[in-house]
Length: 227
Image 1: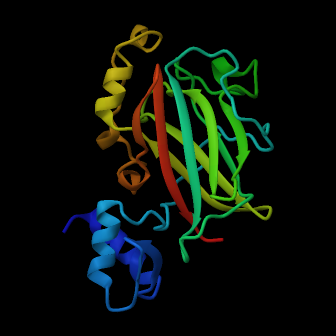
Image 2: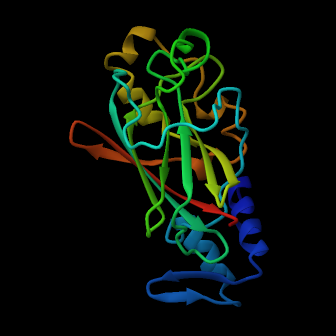
């Protein structure tokens, strides 16, 4: 049994054996623990509690409510679909404020260092719809020394922060994206997922599912939170 499998099974146990999620039209009831574990491991159930991760040093509160956060920054187009679910019931949470921020292709954050001239690029907030979905248009993040490629995320419900995490990308995909401009000019990145001290503590459950979408990419994930 892997550490990741153990973590996911422990999370299920905290739900008291009742995972109120429809799998093939049927709810998982007490006594169906092994089926529940299998559903989580295969991705059939997507409302498991998302791992909490450090906010990091680059958060700026009260960002703009907007869909497109690029502000002219170059990079591979990335559409994000982040769905917020109640981890105890698997029901979508409408009206949650999803707050994201990440580095540009050169590894800079707005408001800090080389990005200090602006406090807004590649930052933004979206409210979830009736299906719990928040959508953003951005670019594939760049890297900076000591960290794997990632996007920071906070989820606010009713004025309170219910989740702080980071979203990661498959290394093989990042290798492909970074062969092209403007990323290629920076040379090889210093850290992959396995080298990242934050990724190794729950990052596998925070990997975006990414596919090609036109000239860019579509990344999606469900975030299970305690409402």
